[in-house]
Image 1 (cartoon, rainbow, N blue to C red):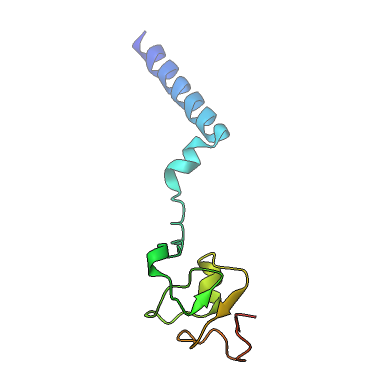
Image 2 (image 1 turned 180 degrees about the vertical axis):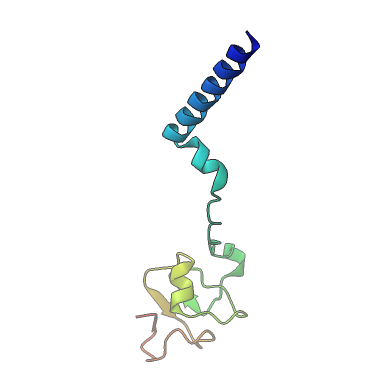
Length: 98
């Protein structure tokens, strides 16, 4: 009788493992998901550089470029008022990142 119980337990175990594999749960046990890339967030409004109007551009440091602003979700028309400490308006037309 104990032989049959062991065989039955083995069959049940194989069936359960098969069901887990078919359901995709077993593969999740052995694979780790890649960590998500950190998201750059714009600074609080108190940390906005007054030389830029139209969006909250953080003051230096760090030295930001247009790609950094886009990664932070800072988009749209940004006017440069006075000097351009971040160097976002190299053509000097008063519009940053155009």
